[in-house]
Every structure is written in structure tokens, then in C-alpha cells.
Image 1 (cartoon, rainbow, N blue to C red):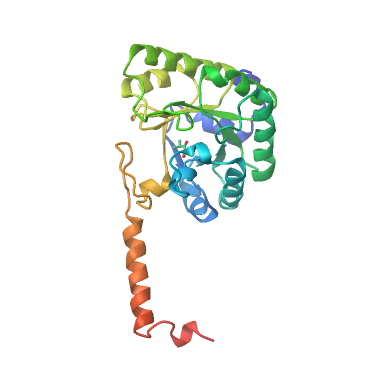
Image 2: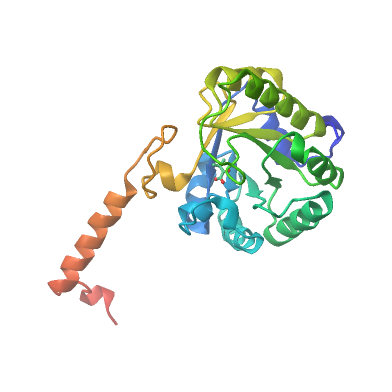
Length: 264
Ligand code: KIV
């Protein structure tokens, strides 16, 4: 269903309108406390299935379950007041249109999120079509697809790959997704896709040419010890936590904490 034929909520309409006007700020959140800090700075907050690798130490996102996504999203919901809230559909929860619809409805009913995101191009087009027909707003995800990836090399080096990604982006736009995440896509291809489609592209490792950027919050604040090219550490929260804990430890050892004011 074309974008203009869908009855969308205002948050999504305003999100789309940012294309070509101002860069879109997106981050992940897995819990209320982080969500409530980042909400005022973000246009979109994603409960990403990256929580499987970041929080649970899984070797991939494949083991993330629907229940895990729902529980984390319920927590995030409490912290999100203004941003668009999108929840990832985890691996093996959208293998056919019926399964996808049932699970997407469950996610939306239990988490009150604004939209869901799923990975893939042509392969998932019928699934996305059916979700949108049933009034479920969908965000696409192209490039490196962690739920099915065998390697995490950037996409768009080979001509065939470039052509396929361009086709997939067009297809996703045509079936009515409101935005597409481009993960690890070669810069000039990300630029071409962003120019070609009328919906916002949100890049992660996909260059400055995308309409917006997304990062995993735990990565950018230095809580998750990841070292990949597309992540920039904007803070070192691990260091700050260590400093605070050492202070606590020393005060306990030296009987300086708790003081009278902290006691009953
Ligand atoms: O799962 C996730 O956090 C994501 C972002 C990295 C885009 O899909």
C-alpha cells in the first residue's frame, strides 16, 4: 500500500517529513532508564534485537525471542514520551505473512510501540505488504542483515549487490515502509538509495549521506566494549562507573559511608 494511502499516526508523518530538511537522530534503548535519558534528543528510539548480543552475550541475534523483545520494549515504553518507538521483530517470528501479522499484533498490543522493523528486501515483501494492509507501520532494514548474515562485510562492493540493494530499496518504498535502515552499505550506494527514494534512510555504517543515523546506545557511550569501524565512542561511561564504584568501595571500607544523613 502506497505511503499516501496509509492512515498514519502524526508521529510517523512528521518523521517522514524530516527527509531533506534535518538529519534524523535515532538510538537504541533496551530499558526505561536509558530511554528516558535519550528520548528528548531522539526522533526515533529502536528496541533493537541487538540486545541479544549486547546484553545477553549471544553470538548472534538469532536467539532473541519475541518474549525478550516484548519485555524490554515494555520497559522502554515507560521512558519514551515523544520519540517514535520502533521494535525489532526477532528472527523466526516473520517466516510467512500469517505468522508475521500475529506476532506484530502481539508486539504492538503488549508494548504500545508505534511501528515494527524487520530485515530483508524482496524475500519479505509479501510479509510487509500484509502487515501494512493490516495497518501496522513497518520500517525496513537492508544491507548487512544480522539475523541471516554469514559475514558482516559491508554491502555494495559488487555490481550485482548494488543493483539488488537498489531494487530492494525501491520495492520496500513501493509496498509502503515509512523508512529504511541501511546497515554497512558502501557510501556512494547509500547516497544513491537515499536520493532515489522519498522516505528517510537511517544509516549505521552507511555514510553521512543517509537522512539520519542510528547507533546502539551502549556502544556510543562506551558501555559495550565493541570495536568496529562504524561505531564512535562519544563517552566512556565504563570509566565513570568504575570511578563511582571505587569511591563507594573506599568509603565503605573506611566507614565513611553511610553517614548519619544516610541512616535511620
Ligand atoms: O538491532 C539493532 O539494534 C538494529 C540497529 C543496529 C539498526 O537493528
